[in-house]
Structures are given as structure tokens and as C-alpha cells.
Length: 125
Image (cartoon, rainbow, N blue to C red; front, top):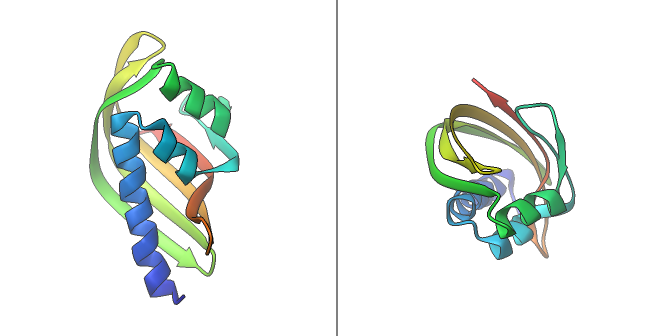
């Protein structure tokens, strides 16, 4: 697969991720998150794939609205990076939140499972 084809597939994966986040779709998130995921939240806390899935499953993390302002991506072989900037509102641990956030996500690709997020960093802007 050429990098241009992988870039199109990565853009599709990013769009599916955003839709899964909005819907709280744990099954879709499970497919898009690599088992080795390490994500650093805006507060500096470290989260795993299981942490993320548990938060969505238990509804302690609810995304009501996610509006993309910018999205850039880089593909180099089986590695991709997406840079998302947008506004996110929802409820986290029972408290409403609204923030402008930048997500930097590192994705890995394999022919069997497609693109999956290996690492992520989220910061308030």
C-alpha cells in the first residue's frame, strides 16, 4: 500500500475515532485503540486502553460535542500521526467540561487490523 493510500485510510480511521468518541461506542474504540496504548491527558495523567474503554463503558467519560477546527496528518510507512485541534464538551467524572483541545495521536498500521492508536497526548489550548 502506498503512503497516499495509507493517508486516506488514516483520515478515515481518525473520522471513525471521532464518531466513536461522540457515540461512546466502546466496540469501535476497542478496534481503534492498540492494546499497548499510552495516552497522556491534559492534566498530565497517564491512561491505558483499558482505562479509556472503562471510562466510556461506565459513562464516567461522555463526549457530548466534538468539533474539529483543524486536522493534519503525516504518514511514514506503517506509522501515522494525526494532529487534531477542536472544541470538546461533555461530562468527566460527573462534572461538565468544555475545552479547546489539541490531540496528537501516533497510529500504527498492519494489514490485518488497519490503523490503531499506539500513543496520544492531549493538551488544553
